[in-house]
Length: 100
Image (cartoon, rainbow, N blue to C red; front, top):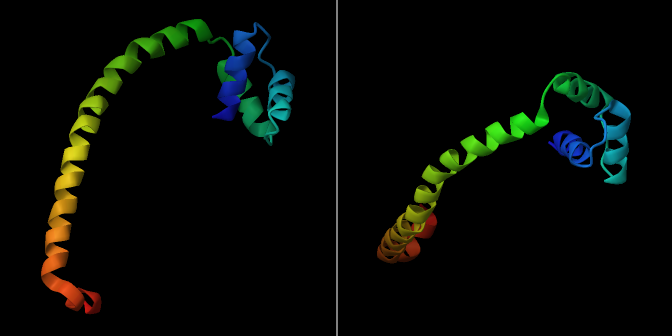
């Protein structure tokens, strides 16, 4: 993922996305750079309009996040109920629960 971030940083600063530039960004971030991954990324990004890709991603992202937000709101209630059930079960067993 850090390779993609390096490419996005280069794009944001209007610099060319090349193997050398990505290596420089990785080195500046004190990250180990795998030349094979850098070459693969540069090859994959050839001919890609990064601005269009980012716009397409930002349109899809809010729709994908909405169901997760509903799940997150319901999760604390479910966890609290489970904890209460576990506490009740543990109280019934006392020391016998330690020995299986």
